[in-house]
Length: 300
Image (tube, rainbow, N blue to C red; front, top):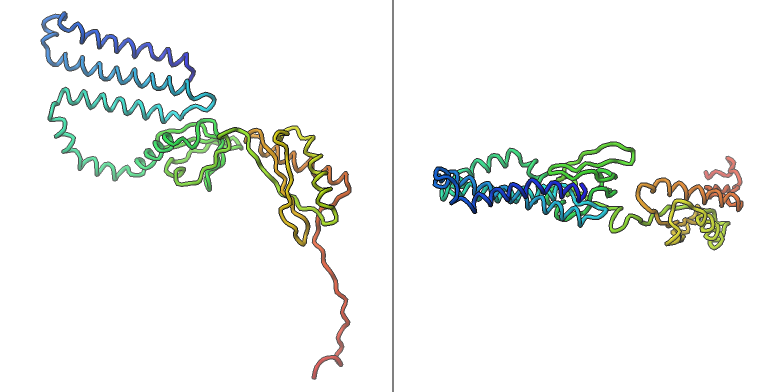
C-alpha cells in the first residue's frame, strides 16, 4: 500500500476524532436532555477512545509503509499494533460503563479463558509464533527464504496464523507459523539480494591445477548471468583417487536466477574443457596378471 493511499485512509479517522472531541468540548452547549444524560456522555467518551485508536493505528501503518522501502513490513505487524490499540480503547470504554465491576467480571471469567485456551492451543501457538516472527523479522514480504525441511520459496504474506509462500515452481504454499519458528531459516534476500553460490567439479589428474583454473576462469568471464564483481574464483577442494575436485564459487545477483546461473556455469566450463581437449575423470581398473594354479600346485 503506497503512502498516498494511506493519507486518504487518514481522512475518515481524523473526522471521527474531530467530531468526538468537538462533542466533548461543547457538551455544555448541547440540549439539556443530552448534556445531563450520563449514558450519552459515556458513549461520547468511548467514541473518542475508539476513534483515537483508529487514527493512531492508521498513523502507525503510514510510518511503517514509509520506512519499509523495498522490503515492506509484514501485515501482521500492522494488525498487531491496531489490535493492541483497540484492546486498550475497549478496556477503557468498558471501565467507563462498568466502573470497578469491570475488574470483577474479568476475574470471574478466568476459568473460561483457561478452558478456551486449552481448546485452541494450536491456534494460540501459531498466533504467538506469528507475533514473534513479526517482532524479530527474520524475513519480510518479497524475500526468498529456505525454511529447513519445509520449503524454499518467496514470502507472499505473513498472517496471524500462517505464512504464505510461492515456490520457484509457481505453486502456493501455506505453512503454520509455529512450524516455521522451530526451523532454521536462511534468507537469500538479506542483507542484500546478491549472494555467493558454488558448484563442485572433478577433473582428471592429467590436467594441471593451474591450467584447469585458468581454463575455467576464462570461461566464466564470458558469463552473462552471474556477477563479474566480485569475480568468480576457484579453489581445490580435494585430491582424490578418481580426480582433482574443484570448488567453483560465483555470485548470484538474485535468488530467482540461482538455477539459471548454475546451468550457465556448468555449460561454460564444459564447453571450455572440451575445447581444451580435457576429459572428465573415469574409474580406472588395474588388471594384475597372475599365473594360474594347477591341481598339482594345490596343497595336499
